[in-house]
Length: 172
Image 1: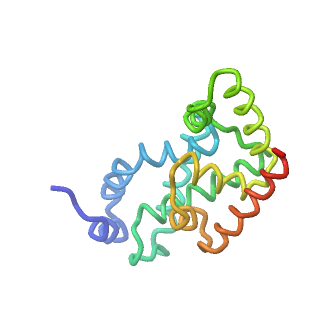
Image 2: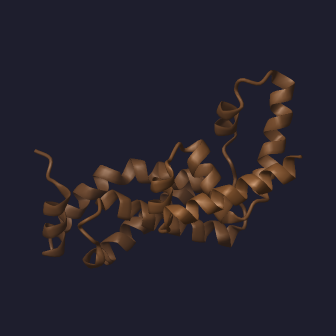
């Protein structure tokens, strides 16, 4: 029988560390994939996901049960991934994701546009790059992006608008 999150969290807060293992098992694959989309490195994604679980455990008493645990956990992971990227100063975009976006273009033209798009997105400020990546390559809604980045939908819309404007200038 699968336990619901409020019950698990109550058990964890009462000292049942095994209950946290259930949450880890429930979210470890998805959280790893989420982190990998940002950093494009298996070891770094694994480290960030592990750190997110640790941060969530340490601060579980601050978790607001009105929201889904997964939203809170992914927000922690997103913030850690963005901090990691700021330290690294680059955001590597997945070649396969770009290929899927541009798959309807013919061969040589596709490769040229792929390279040009990659270079254009890569020079955007980190917030703009992140919203473009999350919306277009991960298929997330503005609400999901806002929740993951810990900001408002209005901010996400503003960043997306500015990202599109900058991309248009870069690509024209």
